[in-house]
Image (cartoon, rainbow, N blue to C red; front, side, top):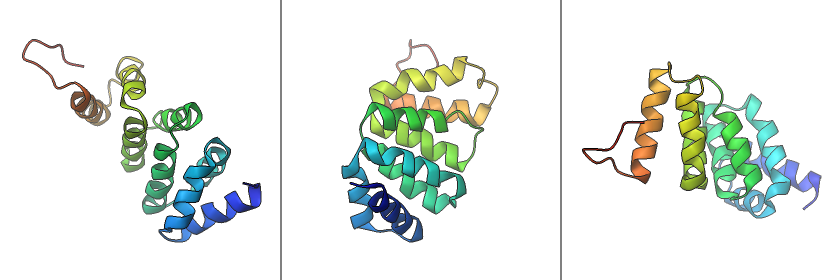
Length: 133
């Protein structure tokens, strides 16, 4: 897929939900990740969610790295979407990344910590003797 086609699909998906554009971007794999990532900076929450859904369905190291990068920001509705996208992309890979936020300086953000704990507990449900995250 060439860069013009990728740009067109991103623009169509930003304009409104578009199944053809959505699936074309996913099928484009790694070559579409940067275009989707670049579009995120000017998105409304609804547009952001559609772009995150593309990234979460491109199951590659590059898309996971992009989602993890988006999780470095402050807690917000878009942060939640990025964390969920990372989790749904690959729960096993998401776990150490999300745990890193808890011990890497974001621990003071209670809302972010609570959300991460909720996501991680859905991977491995807590037992009475398990430590908290």
